[in-house]
Image (cartoon, rainbow, N blue to C red):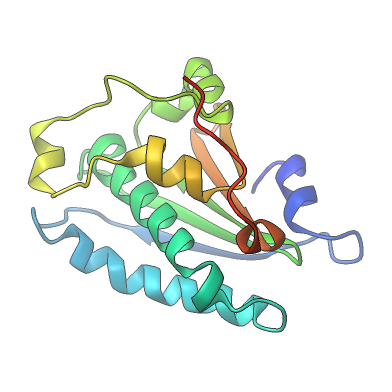
Length: 184
């Protein structure tokens, strides 16, 4: 479950409990076919978010690309770098009245580091990221945190105790220009 800080960002006082859904990815993706497997899931996920917010936001016009890029990159990173395409990945979806949170947990240690937490939560440009042969086997776009995740999330948090990476997209944030810049 996300932290109290995240819940306060995505939920309102009259309904403090988000809608929750967890998805288990067994991995073992075929090289070159990972996105063909993940993309239908992401489109279904976006449809769920759109249905939840449809009364006030035209998700297909304002948030679909941002959510697709954010989730696709975070899931790809979890498969390629965290689980090394061997161990399962768990993704949580939390929808409140004010926004949505995606949580990603893989078997790697990257999100268990205090240094990683500081870098991500402060949106510091990442250098020297794992560009292993496994990553190229999966045709990753190599844009990662610096372009895809930092620019498409309103709030980022790392739970080092559980090794979970949380990305928040606020309903209001989706309608406005992205206000965060990558720090050098």
